[in-house]
Length: 242
View 1 (cartoon, rainbow, N blue to C red):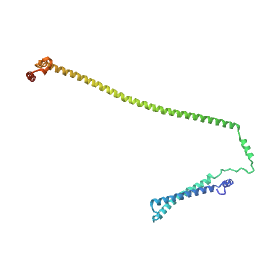
View 2 (tube, helix red, strand yellow):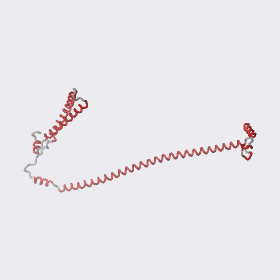
View 3 (cartoon, one colour):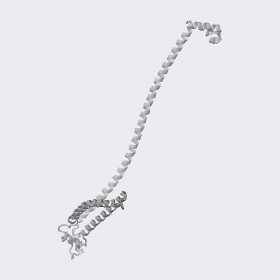
View 4 (cartoon, rainbow, N blue to C red):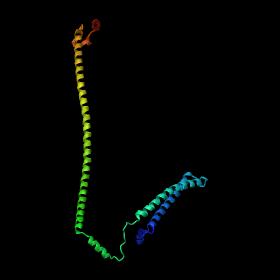
């Protein structure tokens, strides 16, 4: 860039790209120095080598790591410097500074000459349309947020309905099970009642055919309570012989 047209143009504006690049490189060097000084202090504290023979070994190791990183960093920064000088701080071909004898009025006249009322009207129309579209977009966003809130509420309601339906199904199944159990119990109770009636009837018939049954009905129908001892012995003997 030195001695080129780009340098002359930057100099006319009192600008120096190389000075900017040098400041960046110096700033990087300062950061590297501070970083490795901090690294050396922390390593020395953690390893507790300060004032020992291992202190020199630690410094040599830190310097070795720094040289490895510094070499790669310098190569990358050199490439960055060339890129800046060739592309970032290179003016386009055909670029020229405004002439010193050119008056501001001439520039203003050129600007007015380039003005196009029809084009300005189209730009104003596009701006109005853009504003209208922006307002419609904002309104659509508000409606979308409202629909999202409604969707959330609907989802919660649907979840509650589904949960209630599940509980209904569970209770309905329990009710049906209870109904079946009650029906089975009624059937068993009916069978048991019938069986008890049959057994009672059978026992009554057997009792009626037993000998000396008149003893059970003697003396006012009070059964064996009023029978004499001899009558009881005879009754028991008759029962054994049956």
